[in-house]
Length: 247
Image (cartoon, rainbow, N blue to C red; front, side, top):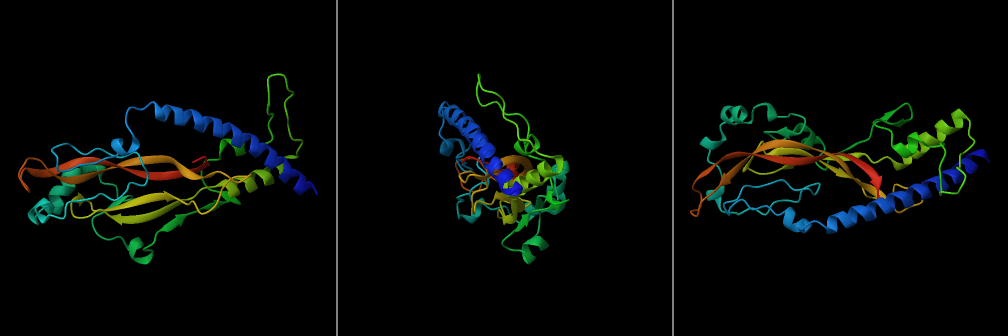
């Protein structure tokens, strides 16, 4: 009976947290409406109109629509490993990029799920709503604070349950960007959205953190096809963390 009572209390608290996060998402949506460009315009990339490419803010990034003309491809001499390695310098990150097809992609072509458990709970940062579970909650200006009367061990059990239920692991997979990128293989992250991650249901795993890796891009400028081409550095955002939130 105690467990069901605790679970009912959890549902009440999470419903309150859901309402708070929803209002925050509404404010974020209003801020997006104030942006002068639409998302599709901000994320549009063109490599053959004389402009320099810029990174997208949608994760994971959609596949580029490239020109099939081989004149835009680098030659064998342009793919010299030592020269490109020296050009990329310290930006070369073996955790997120590879010049050849990685062994992980050979063994797990569809990707791997990064789900690690430590002492009965997901490994990583503890969400704030789990950290402050059981603390006083103020529901209004003139209302008395609400606080669950739980023993320490009971509170820890409920925290572990909530943490495991709402945890959003990152799904990693290797992607081949093609010959016009170096290194051409990069390790991307995606959020698993198979089911709702909240109590009550309604919230899903969404991107919460990312990092930017630096790659070399074969970029051609000028009116003539295949002329005035060179390697330039571009930043590529990679998802590193997901969180249970509103879409």
